[in-house]
Structure formats: structure tokens, C-alpha cells
Length: 137
Image (tube, rainbow, N blue to C red; front, side, top):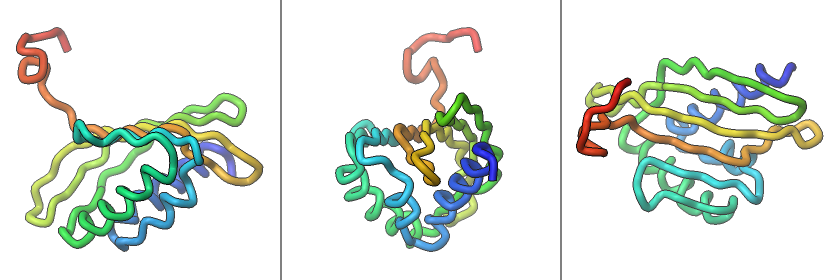
């Protein structure tokens, strides 16, 4: 499997964790020195151990709440054994409400495995709400 296809397959496994409630795909994919940044201001974890303590809980909580990802179309780029991916999946809440997310990551190939070095999940907010001014978009 080529690198881009392997990244897309990994992406699919990570998204499916919300359907299964099993966070093991995250544990297998995160590098020991990974940086994981989430949507909440407090979600900034340096290192696999710190990130996995919360990811396990959040996967369970989101699964039990009926949240899932859909509409994934990850854009993957690569140079040598470094891959970066960006995706804008829909986060579908149990009541059917859909929120567009932003999900980016950098991974490296180590032997036959892809290891996530940096992961960032965010929800876009209008500039005028965050910066209190209009900007060209």
C-alpha cells in the first residue's frame, strides 16, 4: 500500500473509534512524543501517555453519546517518509445536528508503521466572533 493510501486507511480507523468506542487505533498510531491538540482550550497534550489518558475517556464518552464522523475526504501530501493530512469531516451529534470539523496531522513512517507526531482537531469560528473584527476570507 502506498503512503497516501496508508494514511487514508489510518484516518478511517481513527474515525471508526467513535462507532466502536474502542480507542486502541489511537494507541497504536500515536508516537511516544506526539502532540495532540483538541477543540477545547484545555486540550493540549504532549506525549502519547498524556494524550491517551484523555482520548480513551473521550472516545468512550462520544461513542456513548452517539457522536460520529462522516463525509471524510482527507487530503494527503508526502515527502519521503513524512505525511501530512487535512480533513473536514462532519461531526454528527446524536440528534442529527452536524458540525463541520477540521482535523490535521503529521505522521512519519517508521519501518512498516505510520506514527502520528502531531494531531489537531478544531471547529471553525467566525473571525468577527473570535477577533471582534471582520477579516477578508
